[in-house]
Image (cartoon, rainbow, N blue to C red; front, side):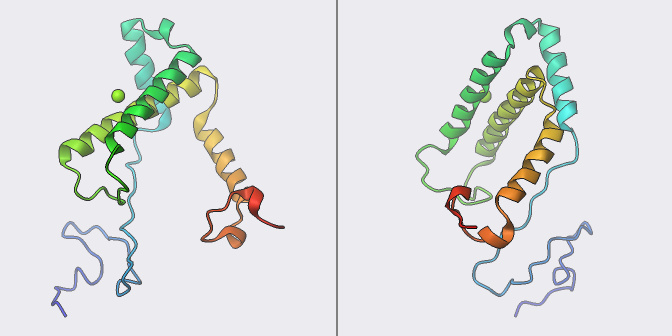
Length: 158
Ligand SMILES: [Mg+2]
């Protein structure tokens, strides 16, 4: 067994941050470490920044809902291009270069920016809408019924 200074055993990083506990660390299939986003910017922050960006360029006249939808789908295609011909890609993207990861961050951001602007132009309050949708998904897919299964909700028996 490898000697530790105790910090690693308690899941403490050098900077004092606590890492996720891995209770099944001895098992072969260890779940990847959890990843979280930064708390900011919020969806509203991003909506506002994009509105400023388009206003400064007088581009709002082009940003009707259908155009924004087309633009977003185009950006989804750019994300897909980065995964094209690679076969299955593991969580965390092992083997991807920093430049490839940055390119992915750019394209995912493009998708998000257009998504938020589309929601704005359609008057969908996305942060609240997503709360309602997650609540609906919980009702549709009760954990007790669907645990570990990928079936669609119509395939479950009551
Ligand atoms: Mg792009």
